[in-house]
Length: 566
Image 1: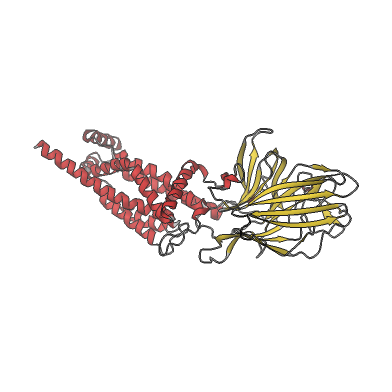
Image 2: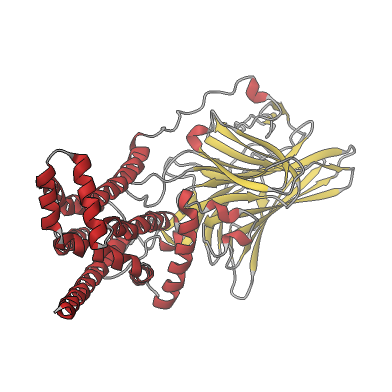
């Protein structure tokens, strides 16, 4: 009876966990409406504001947001064109206005499993969306080159040629006394892009220049979002724990919370990124550089995350270059950490990370062996059940003995009636006399639930499993079974396990609850990733086989003892 009660409580815990996930998605804090116009406080030196399209006579400082006279000859308006860039991993578009990175499609990552020909666009400014990367050079007294400055490029189409390990896209602009070059270097086989901004001071006076790179986006969901789950969209920050120290930590803030919790960090080193389900856009400054990382709502484009680098002084005739790394792509766990220290922390499994990380590591090894994530999940389940075999043996032995002594337990219940204290004491005396512990059957369940929840997070967070197919109709293990075959199989296997365990020690109410539990759980699991249900169905099938084997073994042992007594 205690086993049944524990199972009911544990199942209720799982149900409540997933209900909480769904509640967070449907009724959690909603994104704030479009931010209002900039206030006087927003014009301070530490504020971040979008630069409005200014008339030709003025531009706006990228850091303060204040309109100031533009240097003579500055090109601040005019028709912009798009430059197309194609590499082995990207199809990108760069605007000649500000040399902004306006669109980045990721090859090999379809928008939907049924639209393999349509690449997922991580950066995008079409169909009402806005998610772009901007950059420029800010001066101490006036803007130098902003993301509204018009650039020119040698050609409209760039393509990474066979045999080359990188592709450089160079854009240039000239103003009165200033000459600027912006170079994007795309590397073969890498989601890291090198951004170099070069500035030549051809004027008669010295000037100060600071690089800035910013990600501006509205709040929207892109790609095939998992149902019945709340995924994170917001800002990730690798921040210094103490000023001047060499210890950092990863922190993140949801977009809708930036109005109340804006980011403003002055530190050495670190990085800032926009995070979403499976993908990340990160600004990676040079290690150890004195910089400012900030993020807050924007009056024009939803939200902005920005890096402002160290200032360099340029004497007349001098040139300065500013290098910034960019990571625009999937959160690939085997390589993302090589691009910047701490970047691997963007793959966040939550409080179960100590279980989820080794679980994914093992799953990835099994995938390399099988070539299929579905078979890898099945092998993982077999390994987990094998490790817990001794606990399972104790569980099934306990269940068999509970079944054997069910008549005696029922007799105790009838004898003591409503006297719960004497009833429990009599049961404990029986357990002690017969040499078995009913709670022994709880341990496999107790151990398996954290694995189950950890696998849920692995399937939810690991881009490596995105749209992974198994067999026949199951062409996406991170999505629910479209024909509900696996949930039905789960219900059947749960029903079989109940029959093998028996329910003679349960009262009528418990029996009724347990009889409808397989149906309820099957309906509940219909909403979750098919890979997760595959794990549980396989676990149940193995459990049925183990239970049958251990029960037969126990019967043989009991028969041998009876013969020995004779």
